[in-house]
Amino acid sequence: MKNTRLILCIICSILFTTTLHAGPAADAITVAGEVSKPGDWTADKIKTELAADLTTLSYTGHDGKHTSTVVPLVSLLKAAGVATQLKQDPKAAPGVKHAELHYVITVEGRDGYYMVFSIAELMKEIGNRKVYLALDADGKPWNETEAPMKLIALDDEKPARWVHSLQKITVMKITPSATQPAGHQAGN
Image 1 (cartoon, one colour):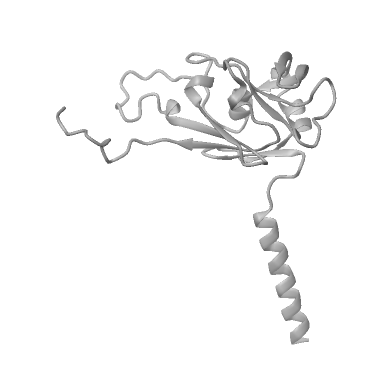
Image 2 (cartoon, helix red, strand yellow):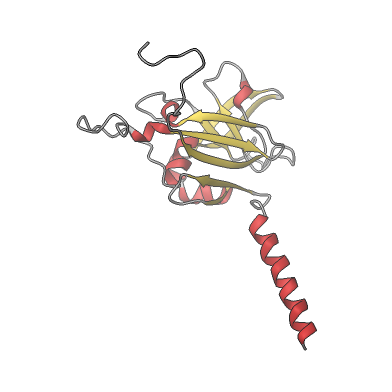
């Protein structure tokens, strides 16, 4: 009886640990970090919950012209609880004034390729960059190397920040460093 309990405890422990370390499902991306509503997002969930923000986009990629159903990255961030609008408070202390601009977003592919965006460049009032999550390609789900979604930074001159096979979007707050850059002296 004791051996059976021990074996069951070990199996439960292994299953629990595996669940904790499992990444998003193959058809989902994870939104994490400094967000009030972290979680996994599939193309179907985005189409349902962000239907008002969906649009069709024609673009040219490295493999030719395509049309995709897309949602702005900033819309997904807003749905995850990220402040995506500039708040004006002229009486705010300098360290907290425009605090919503102190965030960066990393977008990571399943192959480890990642890119960084600032929230300011995505916000309509500041950068208004056209950065989208493409949910499909020419009306069909992405192929295995591109699935489940692709990030398209349409305003960039080169597609270096386009990320295929999205896996994770992480929001991080940036704070000033306590150290000065090399060669900088106080009072200069």
